[in-house]
Image 1 (cartoon, rainbow, N blue to C red):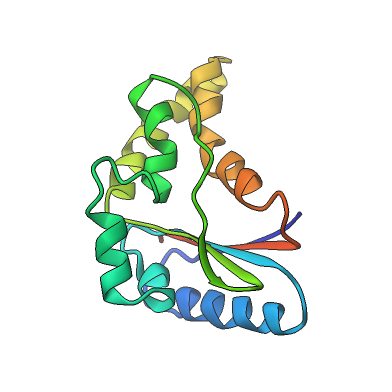
Image 2: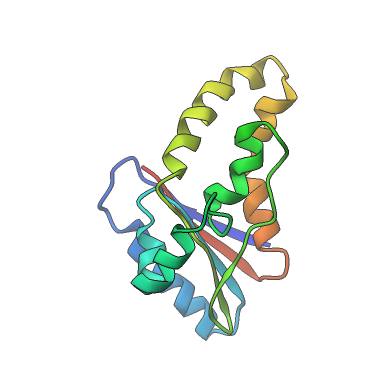
Length: 150
């Protein structure tokens, strides 16, 4: 799996737009790509999906078809990263849908970081959650592209 993550400390610099267009370009070259929306604003999801489809996904209890739904068992302490649901966009493009609930994950990650220095296994599972989610999503894909919060 090849992974590209676009990050910048400032919002509004074009990360999401770049990920959107790069995903389409790679798919047009014949690659199978999964785009992951790891930003709580979920702008990448709203670029790929129409409003009705997003509303249907976001209105489900527990939001099982979003990034936060996949991370839910780990964040709640009841399990690990669940298999992510991938929205079919086109034959060569899949999307791991983002949502506002991701903002709570950021707090948990920052609070777990010191535990990594103490060798705590839960801390490592939380800190590596995004990577493990992306690895599961991209198992049968050529590339994984994600946009992350600033």
